[in-house]
Image 1 (cartoon, rainbow, N blue to C red):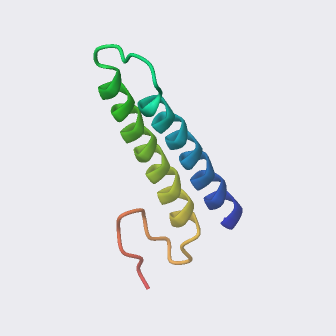
Image 2: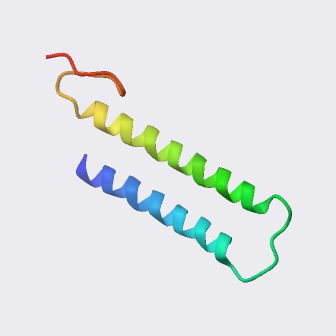
Amino acid sequence: MHSEVLHTLDTHLQRLTTLRGDLVAKRSIAPGERLRIAADAMTCAEQCARILSRLLASDDPYGGAPGEPATR
């Protein structure tokens, strides 16, 4: 699981770095482009959270679902 978590985080950081680069690029920005980039960053974070939740839940020896306490 460790490698999958690291891969997920690396992918997330790479996507956020790309989006940040789009925000700070020295060029004219189309109307609504900043909002789209911010929405893309939010979607990226949500996807990362879902993947990490699944990975962590599958590693729970007590079978707790994401967001729920494990039963012991």
